[in-house]
Length: 172
Image (tube, rainbow, N blue to C red):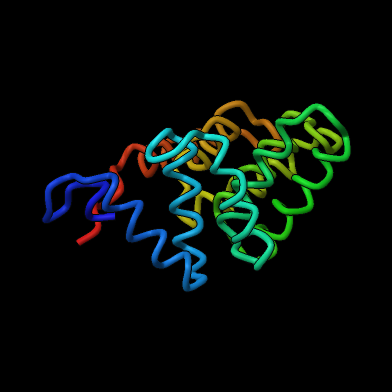
């Protein structure tokens, strides 16, 4: 991460990829996720290469990869891919993964692959928000503002907006 972000060293994406590959060769699941993320945003290899790294970590039960790979699969047109994606996201949610909670909440809010259910969406957003997800904090604030899936509560909405607006502390 230091080579990718330039934290304490000169920014060197190629070195970041090389170190993640070494860790991935030792089956370090976070390295699989890091490679997938880097390739997904176009660092190192074509974005298509990301899918395989997310799949590998997902198959071993790594919740962040299950959530991300599941979300990728749900963008496919076929119902089978959407169902497989939902299954992976639900596995991430079962591990209390904030990204998975947010993604599944979005599915319930939009009726994507599941019946639309604002109450389930709000409950998932709130769990993800409590787990630190900034998008979920923004989403639950909006739901409290609108009274969507929850009773309208401008005080809770303002609290979540304030939390969502605080920057995430930089790692040391």
